[in-house]
Image 1: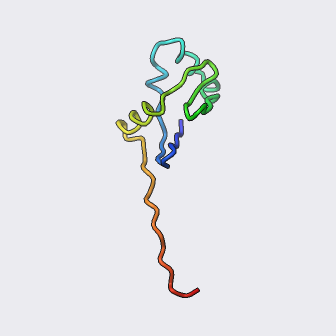
Image 2: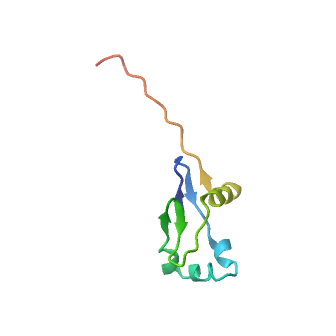
Image 3: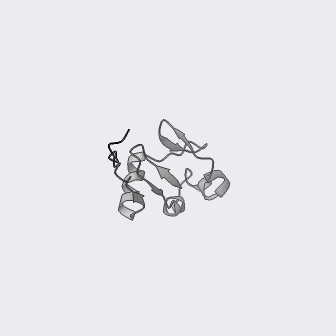
Length: 83
């Protein structure tokens, strides 16, 4: 799942481990079509079965796994002095 946080950091979250866990919330996520129905509700990834992922947990997991890329710093270009 491709994720972009409000600070511009982004990455691809490998949800295989989460989906592999037993539970009625994660069972439907094994179907690729159902997994693709995720929507952001108030900034929280949520599926139609009301299963959701805490953005804080998601960020921590992605950081631990090295899946999160921080945004590049913005550099201002200096003008040539000619207008």
